[in-house]
Length: 130
Image 1 (cartoon, rainbow, N blue to C red):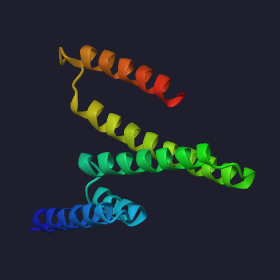
Image 2 (spheres, rainbow, N blue to C red):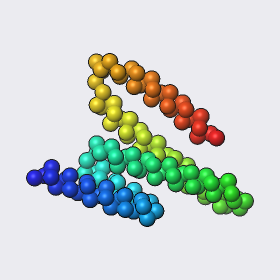
Image 3 (cartoon, rainbow, N blue to C red):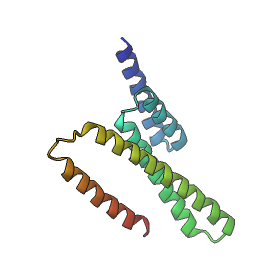
Image 4 (cartoon, rainbow, N blue to C red):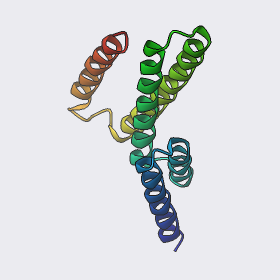
């Protein structure tokens, strides 16, 4: 019964989070996805959604930063961008930790996975400076 209730609560949090996402209520969506991960810390989709929201908000802040001339606005947008980039990286790190838990040391594809992940990180790092 406990499993059924927690699954229902996770489902409700995800549905509500996705509804907020469609309405562009990003903070409310993040709060709902956080609720889902509190119920089940291994719920990958919630971390993916949070990462995507923070990435989108970071790009929005970067765009505003590039379009404005006011120094105070530039500073606040840059701080906002860095904050969301950090949150996106934290979500990505948590996803990585979840994936590593599922991969056993004797798994033959483990080294291939790690190599591909490092390649992707290098690509992401190059793109983040553009």
